[in-house]
Image 1 (tube, rainbow, N blue to C red):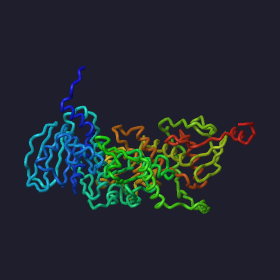
Image 2 (image 1 turned 90 degrees about the vertical axis):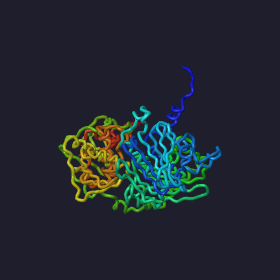
Image 3 (image 1 turned 90 degrees about the horizontal axis):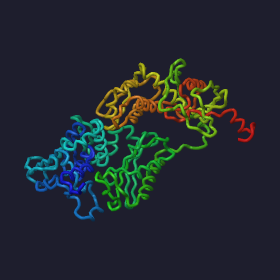
Image 4 (image 1 turned 135 degrees about the vertical axis):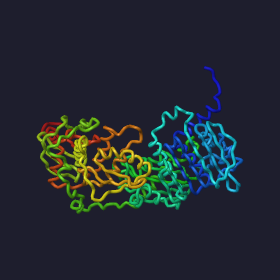
Length: 577
């Protein structure tokens, strides 16, 4: 095959594929252009998840009529001139590729008027071919309208996600820029409905309240740190507010949202030993550095950066987050023996929460009949466990029971997870019994998560929840599964939202069971809770009747078996080990 030079059209579409990955990429580039234009108000309108139309309007400085045709050409920018300027980038955009890339794979219309011009201009670009600009009467600012994205790149359209997924990406992107620039008023409309807006008064905590609710925003701890060449501000969550993933650990470097494993690792390290395994905090940190200390020219999307001294950045992030945790989190005193009397205790655990004596319970999911092997733990080899005689509770966390073949140490939290999980599965295939709440509970979610919840209301109803919209991003819980009556309804609902997948996999069978397992984890009794003798016996009796009593729904052992043979050898009754 002979070597040949690609045509300009092919070159443009290849370059566009690096810059514009999805409709959210278009929104990102246009928002950054508006921010660089010193706008005070940015309005975004989206139709069909951005595939049919994206429009971004601002009141910035505008584009002079004589430069509008130049703005849609490749490598045309007003933000740098020389190679040396790459070391002193103070703007979000600088590559001069965004508008040209968008114009090569969509129908692009730019209407703009610069301050001082008598009238504005309008230019249209379709498939990389642009027409002569036309004079038009418009206010100062810029309106960029992108229609039929990827209309001439069928391969890219074929692999696009569903519209609901694309809308969530746009929601997430817009809210992050609103956090980074609280003095700018953002207004987002999707499918003709208002999705998100800010007042532009500069109050970040107010924006967080709009995203996560007033109570969560009130509890977030403010971070303020400044030394030579670095300033770190923002908010971190206390240890009682966590998520199941790292998606809410968000960083901005010089006003630019970035993805950096080093920064996330620093935050996780700061919370080390303070959070349960698999739980992560909410973190919103804004880092300001001299431009020469950070390289933003790493990837066409500008989502990645490189630091000249990553170890120094890591140490500072870890230090300021840990300092905030120590400052705002009270440290319990050691040596207070009254804590045994005052330890948290379950007020009342109805018998039906442990499981019915005559109830048929189906198997669990995901191969949980096999527990991890331990050298001397004597993991049970049969599914069922024998009848046990309760001995007592240790450290308000473990139950000690005697069986015909030795001693059993039972993790009360993991055991209760298994009991609730099998009880839930037994009901879900029939008529799920729900309990109507006397006082409906409300939960406020960020726009992206609100869309996830809205798409799954039918599934929630199948799982025993009655949830209805109560505003653009607010939902009201009217009823919950009956045996979860002791759990906070808002917490149960949020546990479900965390489990919703972002891909197109139907939420059936395995996904449903994962969601149920998450609810049961939240609803189960916790380590450190004192149980009455009656509650301990009820827990052991319910566990005996489970089909897979040896592991919790997540695969963690519920019990350790110490055989009589092992005990005799430990005490020297049967020779050396």
